[in-house]
Amino acid sequence: MSAIPQGFVEKTSKLSEEVTRPFPNSRKVYVQGSRDDLRVGLREVEQTPTHTDTGVEQNPPIPIYDTSGPYTDPEAHIDLMQGLAPLREGWVAERGDTVLLDGPTSEFGRRRQDDAALASLRFEHIRAPRRAAPGRNVSQMHYARQGIVTPEMEYVAIRENVKLQALRADPSYAKLLRQHAGESFGASLPAEITPEFVRDEVARGRAIIPANINHPELEPMIIGRNFRVKVNTNIGNSAVTSSIEEEVEKMVWSARWGGDTLMDLSTGKNIHETREWILRNAPMPIGTVPIYQALEKVDGKPEDLTWELFRDTLIEQAEQGVDYFTIHAGVRLQYVPLTADRVTGIVSRGGSIMAKWCLSHHQENFLYTHFEDICEIMKAYDVSFSLGDGLRPGCLADANDRAQFAELETLGELTKTAWAHDVQVMIEGPGHVPLQKIKENMDKELVDCFEAPFYTLGPLVTDIAPGYDHITSGIGAANIGWYGTAMLCYVTPKEHLGLPNKQDVRDGIITYKIAAHAADVAKGFPGAQMRDNALSKARFEFRWEDQFNLGLDPERAREYHDETMPKQAHKVAHFCSMCGPNFCSMKITQDVRDYAAKQGLTEDEALRKGMEEKAVEFVKTGVEIYKAV
Ligand code: IRN
Ligand code: FE2
Image (cartoon, rainbow, N blue to C red; front, side, top):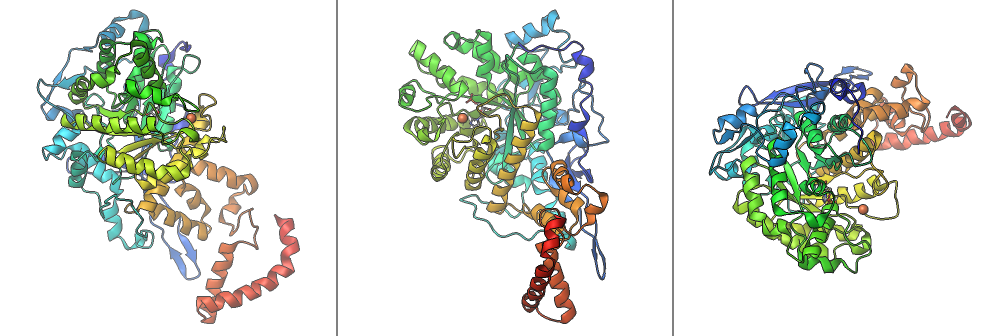
């Protein structure tokens, strides 16, 4: 069991500096929505000016979609003991369709609350939970289908746009906004995201806004293929390692590097308390796999699981504020034999638990038979379904087989049932899939699951690189994201090998931000390429600081640059240590342009003439260049 350090409470009032220090040359800015209490946080990277022969040209600040919440706002007052400010509390209350409960209504939740032995671990300021008033449905989908634009919907519209309207009107951004129309594989991207567009996408089930009414600290975000591709991260202690405070710090760390949502997959002893600390301090949606905790409650014996115990676990977690549940309801009894000939059988934890239950009782999966009962719980708190892929392939050899696709078809059937209750749904996907078999996965999901958002784990495109599976899966993620997957579940370098540490989490997230962003650019998401264009301009002009700061990981970029050229003077050098001063193509291009301007030649002529001259120069200086490097 995880050892809980003495004095946990004192320690957690402080986060380590490395998880909260502001990004270099960045400012937190807030875009005001239609009401006072609706302000959307973005990050703006300030740039240095360009110095030309004729003068100084200002470079505009670049706004960036920001997942870090108040943690990177130097003005925010954060006390982990109090939790984040409950932004959405007013929005939820004023809808007038909920009741405030006295305390947890789940049996397990009540027991934990009354257990004196847990006092030192417990989050102090537990708010009384809410639930839908009798006969009411509080899901965003329900409001959307009635034509109501909620503050949550407006919030995500502003967030997705990162000030696009204002930027278009400002001539200094014109060049940076240049972007080629991408191939969007059936997505219908608007020129700009409006609150009404958000409402419509949620109403049709093509996007979800995971936002439990008991998670008012949440900064709403949206998952759907007509929006920016999102990244999910997983954290969680296991029986062998890590404590509550480490989990809270990992959550903030995940938010810092760009994790859009986070799943708490803890399986240790204090799951309930860990989750409370995470939720109260989490600006992003939190997901769980409730069957993991249910299994803990029956001492790890799947055959002892019952619907009643599972139901209590769902209510316990919904009242804490979990925003989405992975439910492995598609693992039907009849599909289990389909995995018999597989190379790696069932690799999903949840899938294997349910398969074991089905076989030992020789009964249909109770998540399947009780699916409508689960829907009743989901709509009373607005918890979204993440329909689990319990039969996903665990290796290339098993990809796209009958077991996998049979389950996917069942997930489609369950999607329809959930939608009949106005409950939000996304669909989990593979796994391990070779490149040439990826597109079939996306196409089939769209047809079988009626365009409900797809949320995939990678996929890993090869099995031969343990230690590098953030890369094997990042390649698959970029591809499937481009085809239309709405959210990518990150994989760290420790996949298949061990529990990731902080650095692994960072490397996994950055890898997935690359995949997600590559997909946004390829799809032609409005404004997505602006950051690439700005960074490239900075690179071309040797504005090193701007190049670092506009990157996904400014700290790493600076570190690598400084390994060989650490001096402040090098930050204005017109070369780096890769090519040295005389072989820098960017510098040569600039010389060519200057030369053309001076000689009154076209760039083409100048290029030819200039290159001839450069050739002579290189022959002369080549020897010294190698020495210089
Ligand atoms: C995402 C897509 N397919 C699976 N996932 C994630 O895998 C899921 O959301 C959860 O975080 C994790 C573990 O799932 P299993 O192994 O219990 O299926
Ligand atoms: Fe795997």
